[in-house]
Amino acid sequence: MRLLIDTSRVQFQVSKVGPKTDQNGVQRMERNTNVPMWSVQLVAMDDSGAEVINVTVTAPQPPKVDVGTSVNAVELQAIPWAQNGKNGVAYRASEIKQVTASKSSSSAASS
Image (cartoon, rainbow, N blue to C red; front, side, top):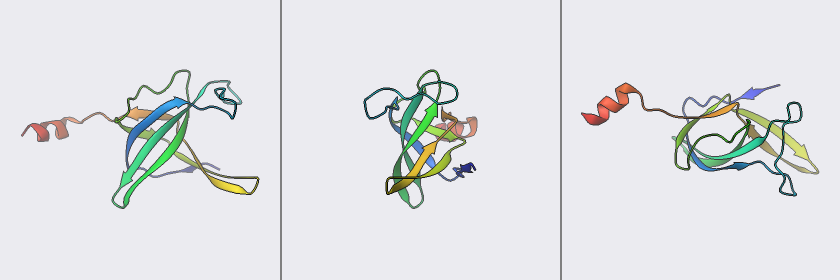
């Protein structure tokens, strides 16, 4: 089951991008495709405050976003997990895309 998150009222800002590594520091690869996995740390902000989440993205190259960039987490998925008496939620997105200013917001800013 895929649990997709409604992000329509959430703003995301990049705080860190790097390879997703195992306990030995080796970059992880997606099991079925052998494509590298990347970890993107996002600050998720809404009306109630902010929270930092780590989102996994699978792609041949790291997402092309800089720290401080506003982004959209495309198809953001919550993945509950439990292992050895510990549990939590992992996050995965199909893509991290930079938010581009729309014409209406850029013209309002220049008024």
